[in-house]
Image (tube, rainbow, N blue to C red; front, side, top):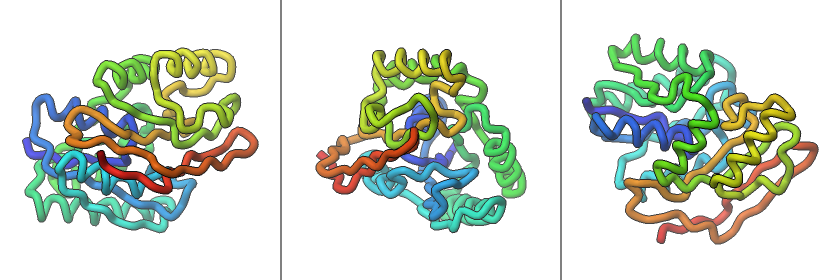
Length: 224
């Protein structure tokens, strides 16, 4: 089937893309750029980087702005999916939802209204297993946001590797967080993955952090 991917530029949407690509044809990426950093639906750190990621994958990108108001932002998502259906004749949507029924049900409702298949290849996947799958699939993802205790400044900008997975798994045991960030505890940005013709190189960045909340902002990124 011809599918479009709801793409945030993070680890989950990239892994979902790779899993969907095993059996289907990915014809476009769809990104929602939210002005609300507390969006209920959409990833926000480094969301503008999706333009470079799309270029690296040689895939067209539909990017739609939203104010990020609860429920109203869904109209902007529907507008973006309608545009993908019209331009690229997609038959379904790939989403990287893992456990958020809020996200999954709303994406499904939009797909049903547009007569599109909704594919969630990561749904209910164990979160430590998900992190291990990131390494298994050779996805180079860095932590671009932390939003929970005990995640401190030292996590920001770091690659998700075996040592980081062990660190996140330990934090999950001691502080009851979701190790893969499914509760919004961490956000990630992918710099390279299978299917990328070039890798993203961060030339300039800035870290903002206070009270177990911070971001790693990629201010200058080039394709190499």
